[in-house]
Image (cartoon, rainbow, N blue to C red):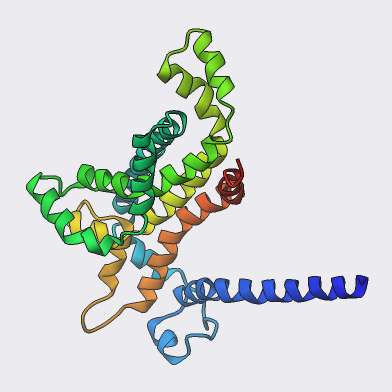
Length: 274
């Protein structure tokens, strides 16, 4: 029995290593290509660079206006994520604590919204937002909040079910109103799931290309994903500069993810059982 268990563990470890290599291989290939000239990439994309150089990063940094684009990405991502956390946590708390038919219907509406692809509402959304003069950064943040709240509310909803209502009742007896109860009692208990929701939303907002390309595809307002598209022309592609630009775009989000990854599984599974 021990030999069988050891064999099973060994097989699982081997499978895990193979899967890890499969997922990491594209990133390693991208980093490797970012140090190579365009000619080397076309000759053999898998080979190591003959001479490591940072020229690709320097040129990509200058041509994509990295610092202004980084500020735009940070501004949009941070404000959108903060608003999503605030709005969705408050909405989920109310839906959990006030058990009425309306709250059940609203929760089903938010859950059903996860099934609607963005492409189905893309053109009507752009048409409506253009009529409201919201084809700018505030409008983009507003749209991100709308798209991100559905999944966030579902995650918060499952987590808040595990919080004892007696804590909030005790706070009410002590004289706290609804807002004081939420911000002093409930919010501190939501740190785990908040980190999870923040990581999930930051990753898709930071990497999003389609929605910003429809709303703020103008000089001075573009995010990092939009600026990297400059290296992909109609007749030629600057793969050497494009790979360096993509690595530069990945660095901030990878740092953020690695610093918060321990909360992802913890936050998602915390609301699994009531």
